[in-house]
Image (cartoon, rainbow, N blue to C red):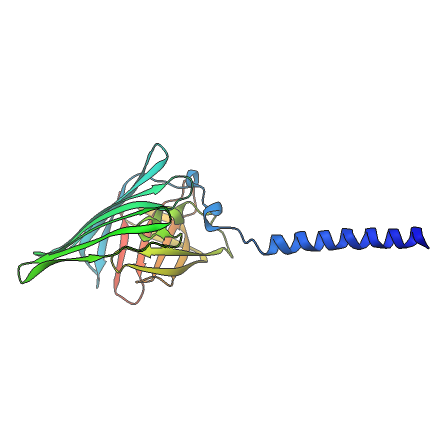
Length: 244
């Protein structure tokens, strides 16, 4: 009886340990960073033309550069008649989290200069707003407890680094600098389609980007390295097509 009881207790302990390990595994979902492999992505600078209501009205140039243990993410977007945005973000190459970002956004003579940085779990900086019809003012974006989140500016590079396939989806938080807001977004694989652009015709993963402002549909080449070939702005007659 003693031997049988000991065997029973031993079996029960093994079951409890296995169950606790299984529970621990279930309690730790895979992080979005662990899914990203930047060797999948074409990080070189590329340009897209902006089309609104069927008319070409502007352009966007975007790219990533590896600089030691950091990525430099750059963007330049212009739209007729007088909108220009230039941005540069620095993100940690290991964690893919932001270290700082600067944005110059202008509509004619009305300008906004953003300068935001992250350190020790917090956020500092803000935006300087100026124009001919109002006094220059500064809005503080400081937050001593900024949750870990991706930079909205980095999203097109991150998407190109994901293991895209049928049924794929991932949720992640991002920080929208222009609105000074944290948002939870979801990337959902919505099929494979053929996309025609000035840079050629591509078989592409169709990725629905939900939860952002605005929401997008992003088309990423199925061939490696993965590259962004088209971006649609949901709810607006606007999209971007890759240029040669």
